[in-house]
Length: 221
Image (tube, rainbow, N blue to C red; front, top):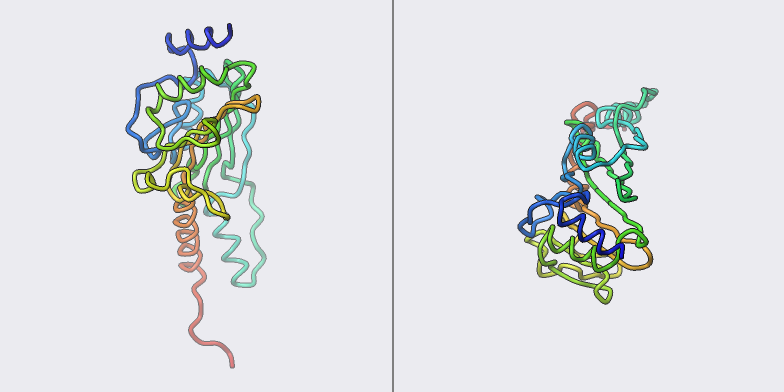
């Protein structure tokens, strides 16, 4: 019964992430109107457009604040203790009991979306309706795992290893990925920037620190 209601909501565009189909590249996809690299302002606007209400905003150090602390540490000075200026996470609730958790990376230009997760209770949306909307929204998945419960959309350079795992985790998560899952009483969809983005952020952070606290080429010995 409820599945039929959900299908009707999808058909009429009422459900939160109904939109045109995409090419299979998670870097260009969105969840509830939110893209990777979006700013907090863009996220809040997308959430409002999709019918979500922000319930919590968690703060953290900005990129500049993190750099200042590390520079002070390397120079042996007292680190600054500023009020947090960065946004780490925004949590919002949707019109059909969806919960959206949006995480941000702190980059030199501000806060940037690095991960989006939307969960929908299985009591609200059934497996069949979830899979139907995932297919209509993002097209055919690049890989299906866990006896059909987990669907993967991978970056073009990861299509051949999409969904593969090794002892340390999943191979395809170096680049942007989108995963949808059903079962165990819950549905979820996760969009992530990947570990390559983390690596580039660490490099940018180290470069910013070295610009202000360069390593010496002569020690006192």
